[in-house]
Image (cartoon, rainbow, N blue to C red; front, top):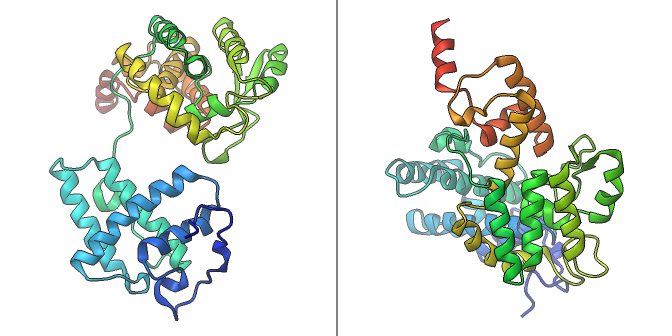
Length: 336
């Protein structure tokens, strides 16, 4: 049997039609959802497709148990609303994280949009199960002494490329994918201009020439190390014929225990540590996550740079890295 992820499999032969089960995408609802995701994303975005499919399969199991529904054509909005009530109950009792409940609903929205090509079966996740706070309230690990310890351990374990990812993430504030796929040759050429632009591997394909990170001693060291350990003939940290997913399943898996052993929760905390460092260097004051009072003018200016260098379009996203208003600032605002 030819699998759907095999390039010999022509998923384009499936045609949406209300006259056939699951709109013509296949007899099994789970398989039909897999084909719909191929329609939406193509053969790229493997992790995104896989995550949506796994989450949607949970909804399929719910439909089969509660409503005996096995055909996407029979799914109505009230079925999704009932599912949302169930997830809301699990989230409120602590049996499920609020973020995961929202992600489950988001995946159902995505797949049903692919099935129907409309928003008739759609629900707002935040309104259905509650909004999650993304304001950072705890300082992340990732100070430079911790980073140096991680790098030494990874190097001694023969995982130099993971060590390069750690350095790039901490020095440039890059996401894991950006650090792995970044064009090191281009970045090396840009050093003479005093800054480096983050373009490859960006979230949602948001390539923005204005996302420029100034080059300092730390950034130069991280870039030089990455250039030194990259595979021969490669512009990034991937070897020839190696996929990003393959690198994720090998280098990243061995690096995560080392990070935790050195007091760093995950790769993303390296990025947050860089943004806090950036905020404090621009504003000249402690980051809000430290719980101290802020100067509003300097706070706004620093947040704008954090949003820009982290690759986000909105300034409000900076709260996920440097925190929101301090408790003292909130009390002062309430008394005004």
